[in-house]
Image (cartoon, rainbow, N blue to C red; front, side):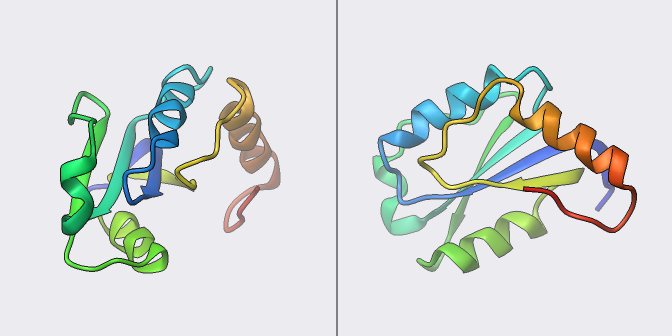
Length: 113
């Protein structure tokens, strides 16, 4: 898989209502989000009212479990930087830009939160 410069966001979910506001906040970020991966078990996928779009991919899995869903999301990212986010975390528009600036100031092989 080719890894490109950009930001992927991995969100494990069971289709909570708060997810819609999380996606809105991500798309209002002052740093463009390259892709948002929504990882949801097949048994919950019918309640999801989000469609795939330019930067949203839905990954349906055969299991339920936040850790496993995140791992599946990480395995499917296409971009160099990955943010893991809960399905109820609303971010300030400057948050991701601030995190990326911190990463650039610290250097290679690090993580920020």
